Image 1 (cartoon, rainbow, N blue to C red):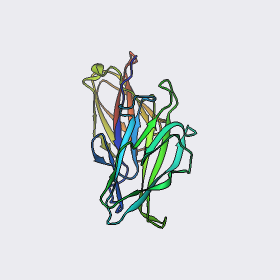
Image 2 (cartoon, rainbow, N blue to C red):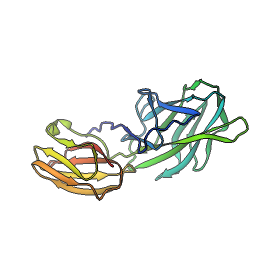
Image 3 (cartoon, rainbow, N blue to C red):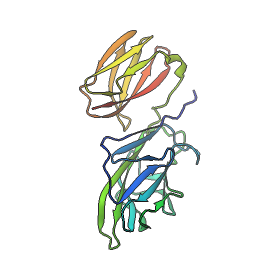
Image 4 (cartoon, helix red, strand yellow):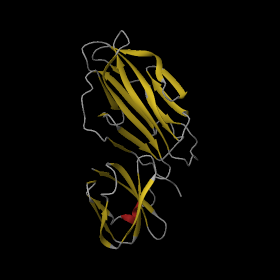
Length: 244
């Protein structure tokens, strides 16, 4: 069955100014916030597809800054088959605890570095292992001293978080999407609800009855979760919530 790309962005932290720089998602010009996760269900996609995530970096300070991107965490990957492009330098693999480019990119005051910047999972489209890459944007002054507040972004890939046959779930409602204790589900059919954390680990499995149901989520830690609803025919639909 053909899978459809699932794309979402979420930050677990309130937006804080990073004083020296601002990172934006080029797909919608939205400001990227510290701790944000960008998640995809496809690997090996084309250059113009969403999972080739493109970004820009703007110097918001009154002085020139020098920017590098560091690899702070790799999950279920050694860093190969992942393209990082920034400031005219493209690499087709990354290494844990390394910073790119080797020579920090200078961005003049008020200027934006945007051409050719991307994070791109180039593992084969048949990849079935969930993976994640966490990157940290760090600004430096002309003397190589760290300045401002770093910004971390996690690129997450989970092939299981795709959407299938949405027509069969037209009467499914999940609310509220930001929840502390009890999640309400309204469904015209009996379902199984599987909860996954941002790294693709299944953390909860519950049955959903016909009509109105309540799911206790107070046992889940505060973060974003993907819920995969499955009916008796094996058809699935994805919803996402934030446990506060």
